[in-house]
Image 1: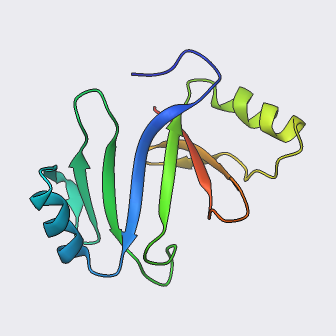
Image 2 (image 1 turned 135 degrees about the vertical axis):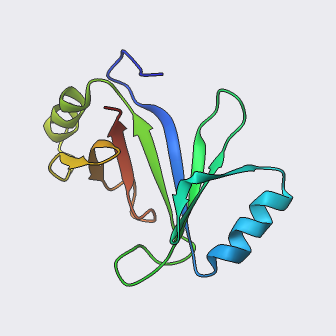
Length: 122
C-alpha cells in the first residue's frame, strides 16, 4: 500500500550473498515463504510476515555490493518531494532513476552503511 505522506515507510530489503543456494536454504528453514515466480537465477524473493515487507537474496558479484551487505528500500508516493527535501537539507542524493520495479534515488545513510534506497511504486 502506498504511503500518502512524504515520509517513507519500509518496503523491501535485499541481502547480498556469496552462496545464494545456501542463503535460500537457511531462510526457508527459518520458515520464510520462497516465491519462485518472483525470483531469477541470481535473485530469490521471500514473503515477509502478513502486512510486513518482503525481502530478497541477491548473488553478490562484480556489479553488486559485496556479500554481507544489505540494501534497504523505503516507499513514498511523493518521491520527487522527498528527493527535493533531502537535497534542500544538504544530503547528497543520486538523480531519480526509473527502474522496472519503480522510481528510486539513493543517498548515504551514514558513514558505516552502504546506501539507503528510496522507492516509489508504479
